[in-house]
Image (cartoon, rainbow, N blue to C red; front, side):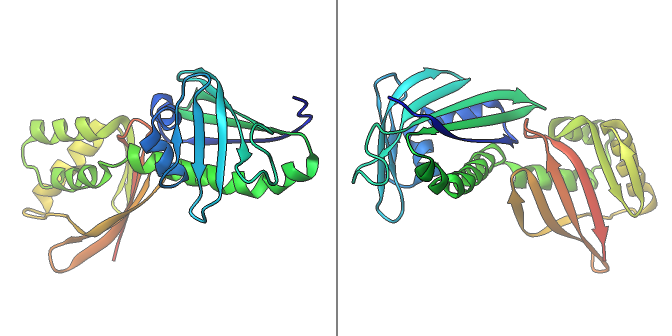
Length: 248
């Protein structure tokens, strides 16, 4: 099959490579990306089906799979337009990068015009994919945020340090109007001092978190007179990498 025209895209996803690759081998996760009814059998020769919300269906055959690094499959529309079944080829490579995953996609076509027709589609679908993966990878984000706030009210040094060790990277940074800190130990000591100078202060999350691809926006209160918002940045491992706060 001659496929001289190719579309290439890449993006970085804030999740481990094994987590990302699971979306190419599990039909439930594949459907979470593409839509209900979509399926994939990731063995060579297995069938792939994409069922878009508007009813359009794309089918193909898995050509090669190398967990957790790559997968290749044919791609064509069941109605034959603009690509017949078996009429194009998609190859996806995953590489570990900065603790997360670099995804590289190559879609090969027989015609340049058909390739160009799919540029925006892949731009959109890979963006959706990154969000779906990150929603799963950071499904515990709200519990982590609540643990962060609870640690600031913990009077016991050892218990507070243990909480930060469980939810934060060693080199986490924290910045607000009273803080410019780096490292779990510094943050734990600083939050302990807050109990000394503001006894009884307790930060509480106000409303649900707002999450997008490993970044979380949270509103909080501390008694009746203090409130604010924090941005939490998560590392691909699911632990906190940086926190920035504002008070009102």
